[in-house]
Image (cartoon, rainbow, N blue to C red; front, top):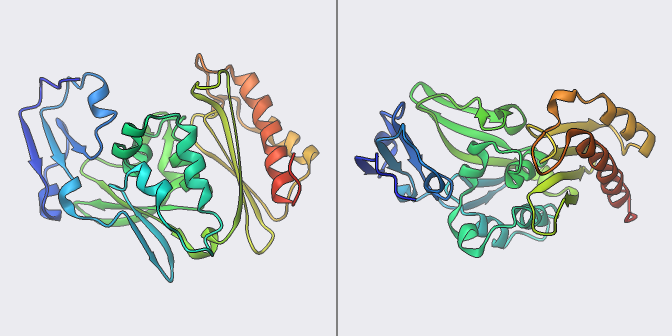
Amino acid sequence: MDLDTIREIHVARGRADLAGLGAGTAVLAGGTWLYSEPQPGLERLVDITTLGWAPITIDDAGLEIAATCTLAELAGAEYPARYTAAPLFGQACGALVASHKILRTATVGGNVCLALPAGAVLAALTALGGAALLWGPDGDQWIPLSHLVLGPGETTVAPGEVLRAVRIPESNMRSRTAFRKVALSPLGRSGAVVMGRLDATGACTLTVSAATTRPVVLEFARLPDARELAAIFAEIHPGLWYDDPHGAPRWRRHVSTLLAVEVVAELSGGRA
């Protein structure tokens, strides 16, 4: 879609070029959402794809994913064999049911900052204990992704701040993972997505998304059984269950509970 209110596109070459972000200005990376609907309040775009950030960086501390990394680069990168959690990236990208063009253009940063319930890449990074590095006019800060998203389209990212990267600890990338998704139609928007992570310590983390207004992270010292899961899912605040044409809240809570049981069964060595 043409954005006929845009008067300037500023090509960023360094961090200093990010100054002046605020009302009327938006960060341009993939632009797949930005150009998908009218943006009447925007007059200026700042293109950050020219900053030269490496899409994927691996060091002794873990994995760092640049905000400008495309979804195709995230899913298709060659990861070390020790990164047993890496398949979760491809599964998350597949849950978006996006075209090849979108996957090659849309970015990790866009998926995170849009904070849409169907943002499966955001959910995968959250499930792996990712933390976001925010560049701001008053300095940098790291914030866990589980604390970044407040609701649909709502984050703690302040005006003038830019998501630089997401970092996942080495130990979490070595964890065992499982993934489940359900939708009302074969190629429909996800109605519920549940991702599980089993750490070397035996601790288990379940992350629920698509069914909820934001990723919901449930942590356990050990693998929970079906009865525990049913009780915990029943206690999730009713306001967290998302309500739209892709699924009613009661249905989403029910199927999320079933998917969680399957995820735990897979993590325990079986496959439900």
